[in-house]
Length: 474
Image 1: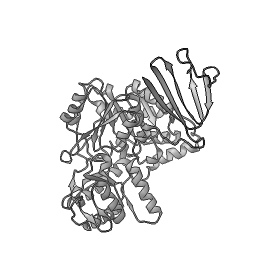
Image 2: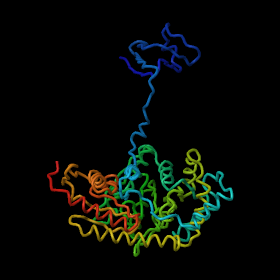
Image 3: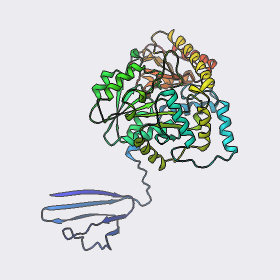
Image 4: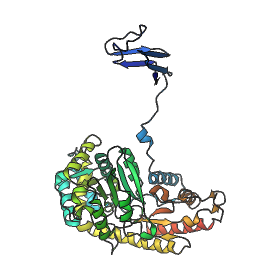
């Protein structure tokens, strides 16, 4: 009986650690010093053992000038962000002179409010350009605590806040901090494209919970409970939602909280980055404010969306100190503290008044006008299904009635991906396929663009769709 191990050496150097022993003496043709030795040769078979138990080692040497280009299996399991890929592609086309209308990125088209910008400029002029504490400046963390208390009804102390380089970093660090290998992360679909990949990065398993456009893409509590297992570690909620614009009413969140309370190991990550971009009568409820949920909720927010500060790269996480400290530990070995300049600007942003004051309300009013235009325009089309967004600045539209049709010179529209490629190719409008968000029947349109731009985009999309002819889906 023999055990065989095959090794591939990227050079002709083969290293043995603690290999020799009285039971398994090394062959005489191998000479070693101490417990570490190196042998240079092309290849060899080494067999040794006592009695019937044999251990066979086969070493195959490769060319010494070959570079090992293998990547981590964990990284290989990740998918690139579809929104980033399409946005970059659209930008490249514009730079090449192609008049593409870009409705893929989740970025407000407004400038950062002047008061916020001036605070950042003054920080530079006053020499506030050095490292800050890893978790963020005390001034900003105190301001965040005040905001969460006044606007969200949840109480934290500065040591329960960590300021990050964008809300995306907050979410990633939270998932890494609480999830172990084999844990399950429950993600309602449609979802933000990064959630499943963040789970995979933590060696956890994303468990997708489907929702329906007829239910405004809100999860069914009974379905949620049916998929919870002993491996369930984290439930991710995003309200208002990217990509659907759906807003979870307080009553539904209370039902979800009652289910979560039954499972002591289950935590909730509440992504509230779009909380201020909301359309009455919808209202925002922070999950941590619900009875019994403070201890098990990690609340993520930031400044990118409501304050039009995407390039400033600033977000934050609030939660029980034990979890926040773990996230801070990751950050200390990853990026360290966020930009000192951006943090000064963020203090000014939180000083604009409740929910961002007039600066934010002006932007929200414009977003609502754009939403209403798009809902009316696409609602007039046959076969198109729409769930009217209650927040954020996205329209997630069901265009699946166009699947199976064909365009001359392009081919058959088989799914959301091919439809978006067709709209970019023939209509010169960049939108994101719903398959990237977990629902292949839809496409996501960002209305973070001027009304004039959106009017032109609708005309292009409608014109491109009229050129599609019926065809049996292959």
